[in-house]
Amino acid sequence: MVHDQYEEFVGTVECADRMSEFLANATEVCEGVPPGVLSQMNITTAADNDPHAPLNRYLTIVGSEPVDRFRGVTPIVSRVFNESAASVIGPDTRMELVVDREVLERSIDAYSESFERAQDLEQFELRITDETLGFGLLLVDGHGVVSAYDDHNNLTALIDGDAPEVVSWVEDLYESVRSTSVPLDRLES
Image 1 (tube, rainbow, N blue to C red):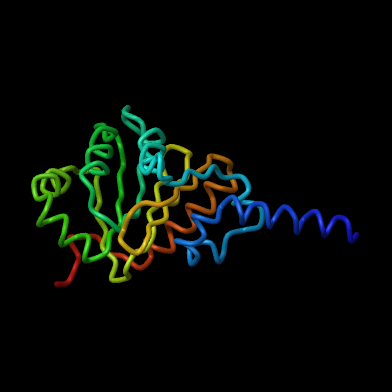
Image 2 (image 1 turned 90 degrees about the horizontal axis):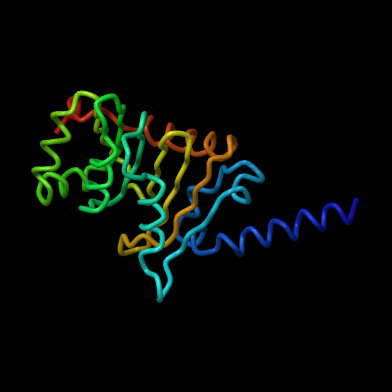
């Protein structure tokens, strides 16, 4: 019994060490993660010799072909994220994105053309939360992604996976954020 408990402890420590960059910047996200989910996830971190590794992993996951369903949460406005999302939206893609009010304002100011184009898509719903978002999230065609940002909104780490337990956890996390949001067209100024 002691040996089994020790092995579980060692596994937990190893997982925490492997996920340390993500956990350092997204602690609140992982408070309710079911046991074993993090150990099933890939982690990609920014490094001095590859500062864009998490972004590159995100772009690989999103791909360039139309997807069936795209659900996301983002704490930043980014031309790269806008372009990657635009490349996977097909005529039948259902897309939902949750942002906070600050991101909404920056989107309207900095990327007004992309913002207007997105509003014209019938299958796209932009949702706004009054909560300040401190992490990113993506659910796309059976794959779950959660991203961590530092205090300057730089993407520092990304965890992802397609195991059923992983996708279920990311879906639950998405629904918890979505439940605090309203569609843009029902937003009270």
